[in-house]
Amino acid sequence: MISIDHVTDKKNLLLLVQLRWLAVIGQIVTILVVQFWFGIALPVTELAIVIAFLVGLNVFSLIRHYRHEMVSNTELFLALLLDVAALTVQLYLTGGAANPFISLYLLQVTLGAVLLDAWSTWTLVVITSGCFVWLSVAYRDIFHEQGSGFAKLHMQGTFICFLLSATLLVFFISRINRNLRARDAHLAGLRQQSAEEDHIVRMGLLASGAAHELGTPLATLSVILNDWQHMPSLNETPEVSQEISEMQLQVERCKAIVSGILMSSGEARGEGTLRTSVNTFFDTLAEEWQTIRSPARFDYTNGFGDDAVIVSDATLKQVIFNLFDNALEASPKLIRAHVARIDDNIVLTVRDQGPGFSKAMLASFGKPYQSSKGRPGSGLGLFLVVNVIRKLGGVVTAENAPTGGAIVTLTLPLDSLSPRGGHGH
Image 1: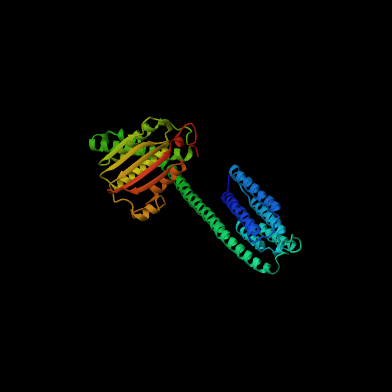
Image 2 (image 1 turned 60 degrees about the vertical axis):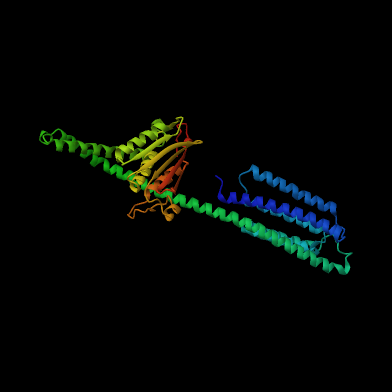
């Protein structure tokens, strides 16, 4: 797995490539100005070879960037070392430490301080310092013919070097900081997602434990109600007999819910589950929810089109039930649900005519305990919806309709429910 730091280093390598292109252009312009404007004879052939080396290094770095996934600190360190080596050769050919562009070493050290680990940065400091000392005694003198004009040329060169270094540092460090901020934001998102998933795991364990505990008393109630149904004294009254039958139905429903919780928590998706189709799954689900909840008006339409085989996912069914329940609570008079197919995605849109979401709820949509209901435990429903769908590779969005009410859209990749694979987690 590629770490976030390696991704950031890869972006920074690309920035080094961009900086090197700017350096190549700047060196060519500088050589032309010094050679033809100031009339100072330069070893153009040797300098051209160094520039060609930098161009080749850039081409290699670009190939490396697009072919490989990981860029390490060592690679960035070697890239800066090669830049230092090229600068040292150029300074050796153009006056050594007397060349005003000697301060470009500070640019390399500054970049190293931003990009590299501590040991690499200090190594770069030692190497550039050694190069500076060496260039003070070993160099090709090109200023011996300038005489009294050398001081003026040196001052002009120093200003140009300062302007170039300042411009490149602002450009480069701004881009690096942008990469680092993007990395930090991504890490914060991953930490938040991990915390939410841990919250779901704890809730799942609690639900599973509660389901186990409820199994025994529900079985006992079922036996007692069955005995009552066969007692003549109780069957003499039709009202009592009808109520016992209704109680038996509700107990059986509770047992089915408990069994579903245990199956969802202990059984891998796709193993032992039933195959169905998109249209059958959603049509059956909508009919079952309408029968159980009996809303005043439930407008359900299916525009999915050509059917597709999927795994009947009990968790997804419960999530959609939860979505319908939230809409019903906000809008008891009317709920609309529509299933559609967009590309290779299943899209379920649920609309209600309630008060809609507040700005604060939209900003923190899907976070636990964010609800307008004002009671303990509220807000977990949409939190579970968002996280379950996210685990399946989908997304949930919420908005307020222009005519009033809320719209929640669930988008789920068809492959995530495919029996061929891709749905196990």
